[in-house]
Length: 201
Ligand SMILES: Cc1cc2nc3c(=O)[nH]c(=O)nc-3n(C[C@H](O)[C@H](O)[C@H](O)COP(=O)(O)O)c2cc1C
Image (cartoon, rainbow, N blue to C red; front, side):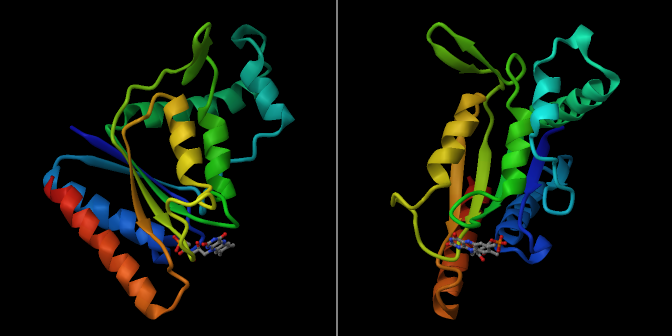
C-alpha cells in the first residue's frame, strides 16, 4: 500500500492556494491509488518548535548520555524522520512569505536534517541517507519570480532536499496571485492543468 505524506504550511489553511493545489493533486493521487494512505502534516496548525540550543544539544549528545528531556526531543525528531522515510510520495504546499519559505517549514527541516540519520559527511562531501522518491512542491506566490534570482525558494528547496537524498523534485508554481484577478485565475488554471497532466502520467 502506497503512502503519500502531505506537508502544508499555509497560514490560510485549506483556503491557502498552496494547500488547495496540493489537495487537488492528492485527490487525483487517491483516485489512482484507491488503497493508498495519505498522511497530512499541517505545520501552520501544529507548528514544529524552533531549533534552539537545547534541541540542537539533544541531537548531538550521544544516545547513552541523553537526559530524559533530551530523549523526548530526539524521539520527536525521530518520529518526523520515520514518517518521511515511510512515505512513497511527498507533497509540499509552500507559500512564499517574505521572500522565503514559511518559518514553520524551516523548523520542520531543522528537525529532519540529522547527521547519521538523514545525511552524513564523507571525504568526498555530504551524502543523503534517504531513499529517493517523488517530491511534489506546490509553490504559491503573490508576485512572479520563477527563473529569476529573487526566487529564493526553488534553489533552497532543491539543495536542502538533495542534501537528504531527495532529488526527484517537481515544482508546480502558482505565481502572480496578488497581481489582479486575471493573473490569479491564469496562474491557478495553469497549475490545475499541470496537476491533471501529472495525474494522467
Ligand atoms: C506574511 C506574508 C508574506 C508574504 N510575502 C510574499 C513575498 O515575499 N513574495 C510574494 O510574492 N508574495 C508574498 N506574499 C503573498 C503570498 O505568497 C501569497 O498570498 C500566496 O498565495 C500565499 O500562499 P497560500 O495562499 O498558500 O497561503 C506574502 C503573504 C503573506 C501573508
